Length: 249
Image (cartoon, rainbow, N blue to C red):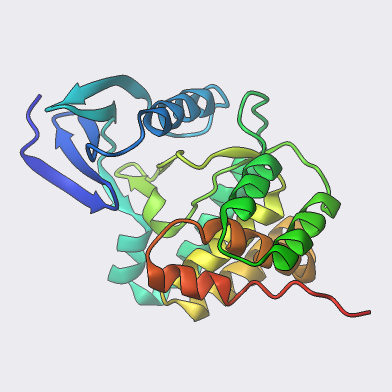
């Protein structure tokens, strides 16, 4: 395996190209269970028929766990947006269409979104009263079984040279409510510092999915709280600022 061409460096992992293969190498202290779960998620999503790079193997490279997938030649939606700012709305619309395609699928063996969020809220640094409010609100939300990506942003979509979009990074995939997934994408635009993009995204998602904006907004404190247990201090601070859940009648 020739790992001499770095494609990307992310938190806890480095992604390499090896010919027609993409090799995601995780840091030594990365959980083996999380690596295997990500590969399993990706394999299960393959079976839904969505355009994703196929898993080829899970292996070890210099004592580190690695997932080997197909290499897709092309540019990410984020790269395309950065290169042609005037087409930004068009690319955001493409992201929404791709996300709606994901939500049109079901995958019964994926973990349940609500279970994951309840667990993450329980792990957060929020006080007991706030956690209780969040758990209660989460339990009151409608139960759905749609495939949710859990980390969909313009950097996780590659447009191949023939124009076909491929969706990357299925580590956080679950089955659950599509509006929770939309709330996550909205917050990712914010975390990226693109407030205008976040607004455009939410408007387009709600219009195309015929979803009330207020409904997606109801998910935001829940999603923000569940995401606050990972990431750096600045991200945690930002996400916790969204957690304002006490409703006064």
